[in-house]
Length: 362
Image (cartoon, rainbow, N blue to C red; front, side):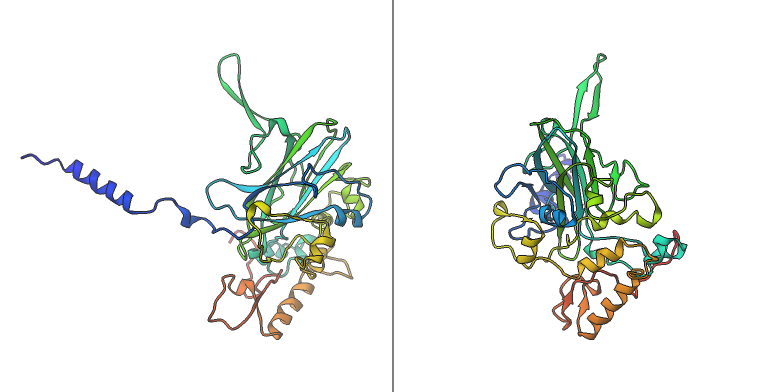
C-alpha cells in the first residue's frame, strides 16, 4: 500500500483551522455599551445639519455638536458622517478631536513653541479624526460604513483612472505650515467650501484614525458654519484667535472649539439610539464635561511668552501635585484599572514627569 504524506499534512492543517478561531477579534477593541463605532450625525430634529451664523465665541459654543465615537471592532475604519444643504455661499466645517498632543522634546529647541512644551504630554487621552467633505452624490459610504469621494472612470485607452471629487480637502490644517495634509493627533481640522451649490446635499466624512487608549472612546466637537473658517469674518476670527501664519499662534485652532474631552459616562441606550450633545450647555447639563479642560486648552494655544498664561508647565506641575496630595493617581500611571492598586485613577491632561523624552531623533 502506498502512502501519500501530503494528504496527511493537508488533513492535519484543516483540523487545526477548524479547531481554532482565526477571526482576529482579539486584535480589536471590544464594544462599548450604547456607543457605536460608526454613525450618522444629524440635527436635533433628525434632518441635515443647518450651517449656523457665527459672530462670537458664544455662538460657537451654542452651535458646536459634541459627541463620542467608539473604537472600530473590525478591519473597517470607524467614524461619523453628517449632511448639510448648500447655501450658495461659503461654508466652514471645523472639527476638533480629543484633546491636544505635543512632543516634549521640541522644548529643547528654544523656540517659542518649544518653551511651552517643557512638560510631557499624556498620550493616552489623544485621538485623531480626519476630515473630508464633498457632494453627497459622490460619496461612496453609507450611514453604517465610512467611505470617501474617490471615483474611477475608464479613459479612451481602457485604463482605469482614479479621481478624488471631494470639494473640501483639509487644506487649512491647524498648522498653517502644513497645507494639504491632515492636522494630526489631537489637532483641529477645518476646511472652507468657497461656494456651495444651493439646495444640494453635501456629506461630511470624519474618519477616526486613532481612539484614546484611556477609555477606547474618542470625544470631538463639530461645527458647521456659514462663511469661511479663517479671516476676521470667519469662525477663527469670531473665536478671537489669530489667523496669521506665525510660529507663535500656529496652535490657535485648538481654542476655537473648547471642551471636546468628554467624560466616559455610562450609556444606557442601544447603539442605534446614540445621540450627541447639541451645544456646550447641553454637554454641561449632562455632566459630560471636564471643567479643567478649558484652562488646559487655553494654555496649549497661548503664546508661551504670555505673562498671564505662561508655558504649559505652569498648568502641568500643579495638576500632578494636586493629584498626588489627594492620594490619587493619573491614568498615565496605568490606564488599565488595577484592582490591587488602592489609588483612584483620574484623568490628567499632562503626562508623567518621570517619563521625560530627550530632544532629537534619539
